Image: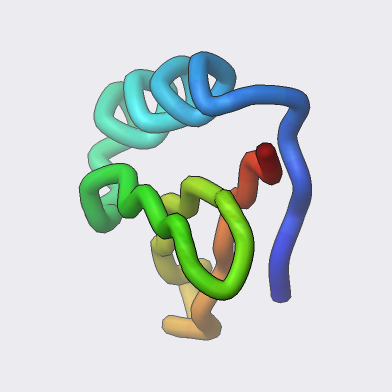
Length: 56
């Protein structure tokens, strides 16, 4: 499941919040192809993959 955030800077805020809660996550991954986006991936308590995405 993926949730869109408004900007890459918001991903940094989410990473801080996840760190404060002790939730493991990936670093921010910046992609240029096939379109510009940035993502952070983490798992919920049932280990279902969740993703935060900033487009553009």
